[in-house]
Length: 249
Figure 1 (tube, rainbow, N blue to C red):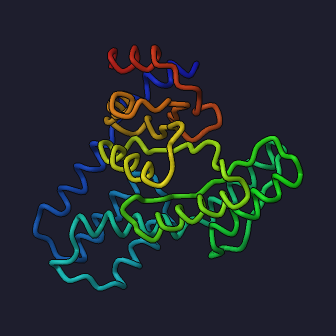
Figure 2 (figure 1 turned 135 degrees about the vertical axis):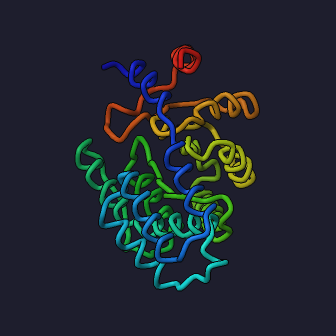
């Protein structure tokens, strides 16, 4: 199956079932134990993995939310926090990919200052005449002040080595966030110019049209789009193909 066909198929899918399920959980008056069980069921249906679900449910239960505090908003905040917790796995994934494509990786221990890792990586690249130095800043939620302050610090330390750095800043956006992607771009642009966009998770959302809004409002190039988890599911963005797939669906 070529990428265009994957794109057509992916844009038909939607996160409606998940969001509808969450709405139904919190729109009904239920005992807390039933709410937690329903949350567990929804997460399992979303294929996030039994291990994650069990740990997440335990952490929610341990926080001992009152009936008034156990809300939909708190649920989404809590699940986002748990996925930051899983950042270590992202480092492991990066190591595997670096080995696969035969490139070096610079890393530090979990919990290290991100700016110091970035500085060390860029300094190493300059000293060894590397063709490229790609710095993954990991998940940066624009509404989390501490994470954005870390991002600002990364930009500042890179400029100590090269005043023109970063030479490109590519923002990777999650299509499932919909219009929230606009806010993300606006906040990141306050720190550094954005040279390109990569949009992922077009296979699990009905909000793929956010690409149209981004292109219209910001005139930032869309470099690539992702429609799955496999290597071949990320490809160059071709506007003609996207429009044709979007309209046909």
